[in-house]
Length: 196
Image (cartoon, rainbow, N blue to C red; front, side):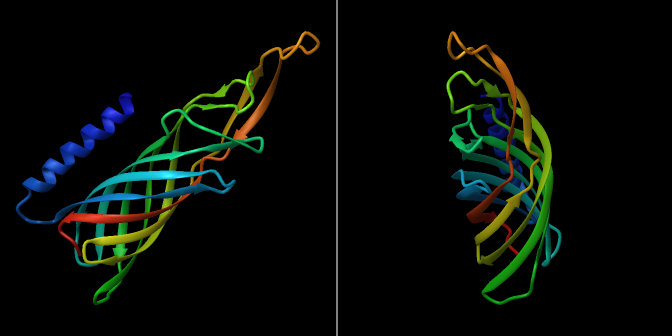
């Protein structure tokens, strides 16, 4: 809950700054899309991105993202508590064009990986963690609309789970599990404020 409030506070504060600017160098992007991990768990994503236009070819921004997706543990898909969240900073370059412009960029920041329960009852949970991560992005812009693809590269979660006693004939034991946290995102965006 506190992370949702933090992201909302940042987004509202930065949107207020964008609207208040007279020089029109600030903009604000809102994106929705689809996410998928390399082991075929999928879901939805939303991100807010205040940005600053340095010139006609280059902009910088801060992406605040919430990815609601499943995770795969030992070949079984399971849900997560509240989704993965991230705050990252990025730079994007735009290539010359008339109606359509291609762009590419990179970002780096902090990812909060949500708590994940093992899909088998009694096998415990993998606690939430913070990781440094990043992403390349490519896309195409048409006016105030963007279509983009990103691949978020985040370290894997590894944890020893304590497995509770499953029967009178089987004692409790521990086992190491590994979860892939990297994911691909395909998004559609609308830009408010200055466009390139």
